[in-house]
Image (cartoon, helix red, strand yellow):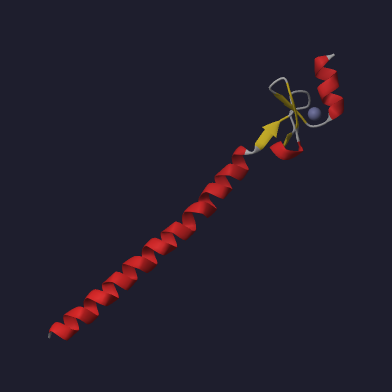
Length: 74
Ligand SMILES: [Zn+2]
């Protein structure tokens, strides 16, 4: 009887560990998706949405290209 209790205890621990590992595996993916959505910025001139990495940042404003940056700051 004690042997069975040990087996059940081990199974429960393994299941809990797997669940927590799965949860840990999901979270970064969710965060990455959110970060991608937040990473979109809007051009001050034409209003187009583009990834922040492709946008030009000048004086705290984003632009889709050098041309629009100059246009807005001229
Ligand atoms: Zn633009």
